Image (tube, rainbow, N blue to C red; front, side, top):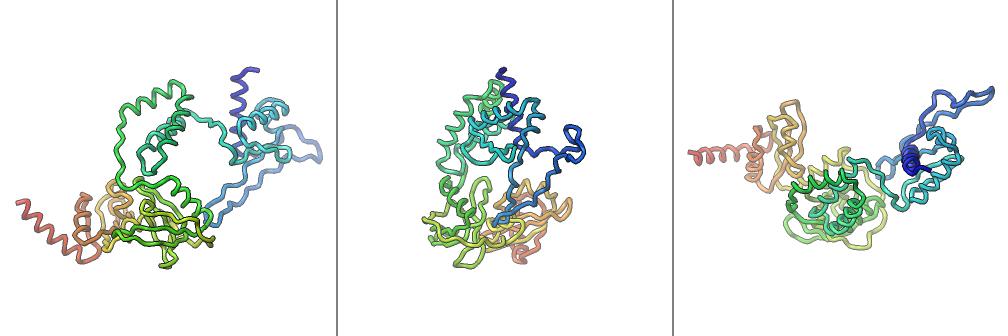
Length: 355
């Protein structure tokens, strides 16, 4: 048997098993009286888990004869190819005369196109020196395995990127990969999480929480959780947490504080954490403002094509004024009034300093 032809057929078989069987507009062969074609597959309602996240539908089941027809081979060849996929680690299950590719099981060989391979290698290289501590050796091992099997054309592309790329150190604290997975597991399993926490002003405190979501800004990781002692939602920096084990009892997940969880977390880390808050109108397009304002700088709300609203916070009114000045965008203060007065006084001082 031609090896290339066999490998190509396996790839086609794997691709088919990952997609639902197409709806047939007519039977594959003429039907006789009293004989019906396969019924159209019924759409499944989208399930949701208890954290209100969509749960993927069950993997599709492909009838053996239909696979054989699509591949242009006999059902016996399909059975033999299915056995080869199973031997390679792919969890293909026989279901009512058909086949289904299940999720999970041992990690099978990856089948990547050129762009996917380059993206994975680039991601592994940038993982070294990132915000997750201890992941560097794991990334290096995975990178070495992948680079061994890269074709020359891809290796040249990646080496060109690596030759002109300089890694800069990431500011802020790092978090352990084990801590991230433990927090994620507690969120998913709805288990109470206790930890020692270093607050914004440097004090040490113990927190008992119901964890719900993790968020990453690129530099830092945050946990959104219901604080049982304060009976309110709180956002915690993960690099300031020291987990206490084991986790506590299960809890019933609460309705999230806002529909847009990302915006709520962003407001928590850029505004609510500070003692002083401000709302200003930025006289700039939402695209330009978004390019100037990071996740920890405030929350943007588009007004029209040339205006947007920024809600932000700082430790003092002076710090708010300086923060807004460094945005290098025209703005109008909506609140608080004392910020308007302070900006006016600072403007007079800066005008005198400029001569």
